[in-house]
Image: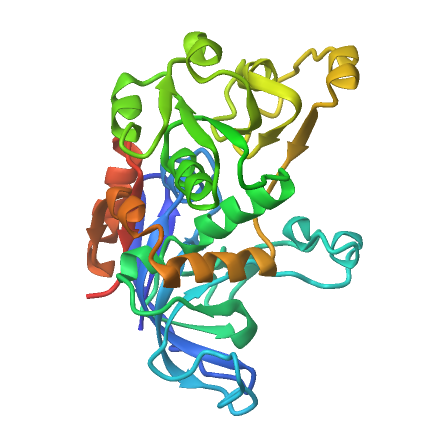
Length: 339
């Protein structure tokens, strides 16, 4: 079978590798789509020089074989089911996992494969074997929507950790793919209002159909008012300070987007003390977030929002074109996979 390998900056090749077998507690899945995320783009651009890498951690596809130990087990995906795959490994034994915080599991997320590749999920392939507990049935939906389950699970984690409640006023800083997903999910979960703060006029315009308001950073407080939860999906200098400025008393600033490692920010603790505001970091997802993501996808409540966020779709044979587009243009999501 074929698997896509990022072999050097700007280089992606299809390699022949052995088709995986299905262990008793696993499923064999024929992949039909995988989203290219920021990490994949950084591999391709050379910002994250880890080669040769079997990338792709947002895959989805159809179950073509079920292991003997899980065949017919209630709740387990079965033959023919369309599933989204949770490719994050959780050791279950580290201090983070033992505290119930498996999103920040301390075990390495990459591994060396027998064929000489470094596996970081390896979802850009024809077939993959996964533990049955890492596959989630998503119903009869477009496969490109199923390939968005991982980022949806990340947003579910962000909202859960951020303490979002129905009726909250929400501001999302950043109008890119993850910002738009935060907007859509906050609206679907019952936000009283939800707006986008974005420097790009084009992205503000593209977000208006789903937002109660949109604003440039310097006018966000005036346009959107105070917010109970502010999700920072663009971790650029100045966005944390903006988030704190947008908070209502008792509000939470949720740091979803990655910030530059050397960035330092001065924050007045007295203000946080008197206003009872919180700053919360979030990263990745946990199994309960996948349950929420699968339910949202199956229900169809996000279908219109997800359709608007598919920038382009390519077959596995066109994987290099997908990477080039994701690296060269402002995109929402590029999906690669299938014939």
